[in-house]
Image 1 (cartoon, rainbow, N blue to C red):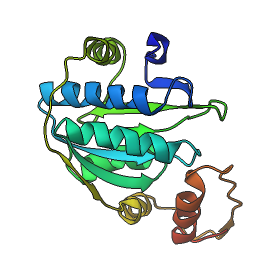
Image 2 (cartoon, rainbow, N blue to C red):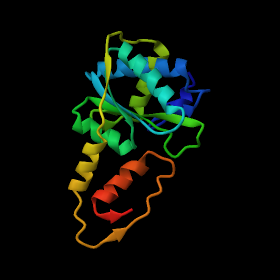
Image 3 (cartoon, rainbow, N blue to C red):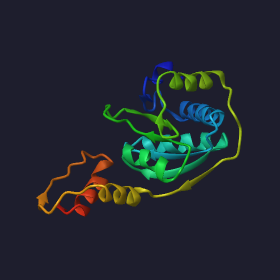
Image 4 (tube, rainbow, N blue to C red):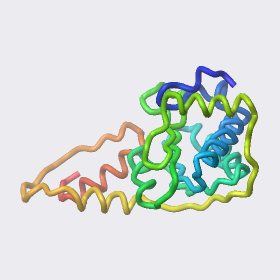
Length: 192
């Protein structure tokens, strides 16, 4: 596993050279051990719409389950929906599979413990667990939950715009934000 994929704020590399079934499996085992050592047992898992994301989600989930983690798969969602799901579902953390603003060959993992992002030295602790092979075995499980409607309700319930009629064009740029954003604008009374 290339140590440079462990960045300051996320774990990120190219698919399939750096992020493949073997490396993502090791990463999932390391994340499972990390979470379990921190007392976390149940996390949300979201993904963006990059072509590599379903493979990464399957490989990561398999390893996390083998580590005794319970995964709540929230599907293809924008990163803010993953953050919302942690609070809404009362889980112990979350992982968003996303290439963010990087070129198409890249993908990666944004990690949360509780409602806080994992970064810096904590990311390096995960790397050290992966390198040492000091994993924890268990019998976890995967369930699926759609939190998009709850997220849209939350956002639209907390915005007051007044009575001015507005028109807006939504261009999600082939990203996961398009469908959620369009529905938020529609519910707020915008013509989209």
